[in-house]
Amino acid sequence: MTEQSDHANALHWRFLFLQALRETGNVSAAARTAGKSRAAIYRARKQLPDFAADWADALEEAADWLELEALRRAVDGTEEGRYFRGEMIGTITRYSDSLLMFLLKARRPRPRPACGRVRHVVGPMILPGFYARRIPPERPSPPSAGLLAG
Image 1 (cartoon, helix red, strand yellow):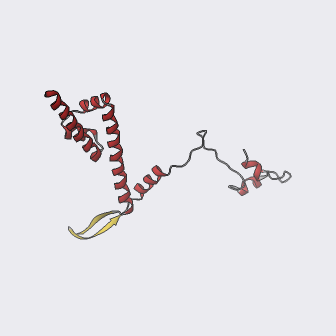
Image 2 (cartoon, rainbow, N blue to C red):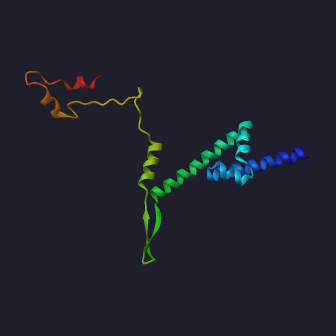
Image 3 (tube, rainbow, N blue to C red):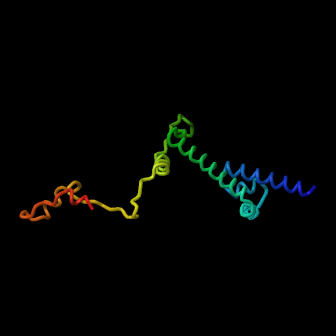
């Protein structure tokens, strides 16, 4: 009978841990909620592949909630009280451009060159007067198509 109660107890603390991890995204806080040490929690994750998968899923869900809150603050804003002589006289809505920027960077990262280097093209299209000053008048100007080709 103790084997069944041990199994039920293990299922119970894992459920509590995963639920708290989904809500907080914090292993220490979730471990406290489950009444277990961090060491015991990490040991269980290492030994139980299903628990490890549920753990990863809980962290993803916590990240989804954080992303939703960041989006809400960026787009809908947050109300801030305005005070005069210690008395609230109204509110303003403050929006977060930096949160919006981070969300956009995460969802639409810039493509990187395959070789890992950024190649800067400097030519007549960017600096039109540069070649005219540097090339003596007796030489023809370089063709623009040849500069951009490779």
